[in-house]
Image (tube, rainbow, N blue to C red):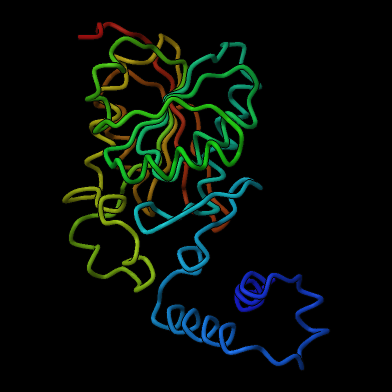
Length: 268
């Protein structure tokens, strides 16, 4: 279904076949006005996901507004990688931490597709967390949502996880002004990765050993052409072994998987 078909089927509450079978049907003034206003919003560049207030991710429905980043198909690779690790590893995974959860799509999907796992998900934005909580209810799963700037929340210091996962902001501050008009509708806080786009990676990689169990996994999504820089951050930390780098559908290095090889630090 193309974008126009998706808009019209949603607005007219019909399926794709009915849309064409009833193409000569005259719309009342209210419906015509609604369609006109929606088309104007789309022409101006507003993403269809915000117009409809929802999107699909991992085959699940998620509510959205402009307080949260729109889930991308590439992030499904991140989730699928985590699921594969949990199901295929002899290392038992009971607790997962999702950093920068946004709409909650990663956390909700993990609970939906992994049995007997506890997921804690954090975000600095209370507005984003409200949407994430709605999405957990919508998909009938339980997630422990916490307001936190990465690891700042003290409650996290009482926990240890077998897996930490994140799709952090990774666009450099200077590049944000050059983004496509559609992306500029999304919250800047979900886009801005600092001067070089790597600020969150440095913090997450350096602080994760305090919260990961020995032998635990750290899995993160990467931006275009960031692989080598992120590998260097891992190597300089001295705490991780990079296990795998996974490409997306466009052959771009998208997901990096690392494992904590020893844990000398203690939670402070």
